[in-house]
Image (cartoon, rainbow, N blue to C red; front, side, top):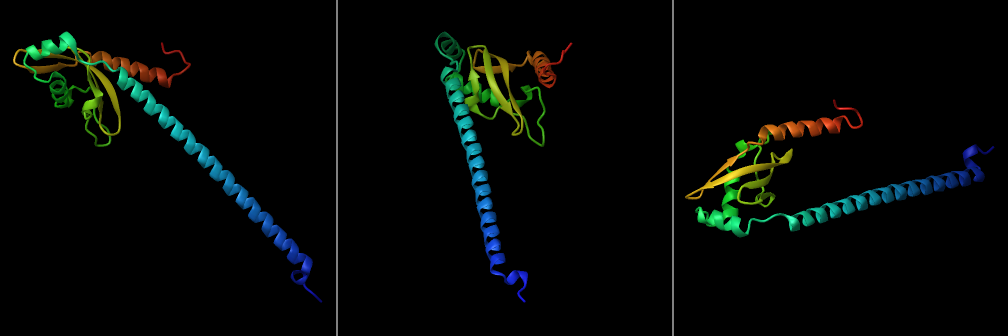
Length: 175
C-alpha cells in the first residue's frame, strides 16, 4: 500500500504549492522594490527642489556695495565683506542659545553670513545638531575696528519662543 507522499498527485500538488509560493514571494519582493524605488525617487525630487530653492535664495541675497562699501573702506577696512564675516565668526558668545549634545554654537559657514549693508549682518549659526538665523547690528570705528551687538537678542528669543509655541499649538487658541 502506498503512503500519501508516494502518490503522484501529492507530488504535483506539492510542486504547484511551491511554485505558487515562489511566485508570491517574487511578487512581494517586486512590490517592495517598487515601493522603495518610489520612495527614493521622491527623496531625490525633494532634494532637487531644496537645492533649487537654496540656489534662488543665494542668487537674490543682498550684497554689500556702493556707498556702504565705500564708507566701510574709508573707516579702514580693506576688504569689508571678508573682514566683517571673519570678525563675526570670532564671536559665538553673541548667539543667544547653548549648544546641545556637546556641540558648541558658532558662525561656522562664511557663505551663510550675509552683510546686508553698513549696519546689519544676517547670519546662520549652529552647533552641529541645531541651528538658526540671527540679525546682528555692527559698527566699524575709525581704524577698522568692528564691534557687534545683539541688542535684538531678547526680542529674538521672545519671537522664537512664540513661534515654537504656535507650532506646538496648531489650531488651538494661544491666548
